[in-house]
Length: 84
Image 1: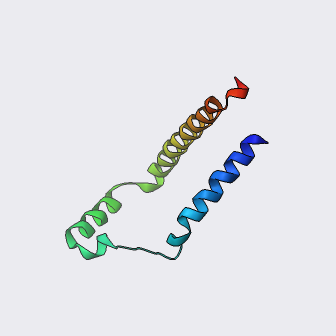
Image 2: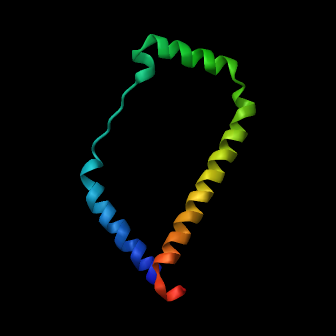
């Protein structure tokens, strides 16, 4: 209950701070503007078997995300002196 209130306050502050940036949409297409980079990306996409690498990439990023979530969870629990 207290943690929900803290998260609600943090989310509210972040929404207020980031509200002016909602309408800003910055898009830079670096790959198509530089022919050397575009050729390199095409060669890498042709050579690498993405159907075999995609599960490995997804598992790696999901483990990384899980570690970040657990770290944040432990940091929040360590900040609350009542639960110790």
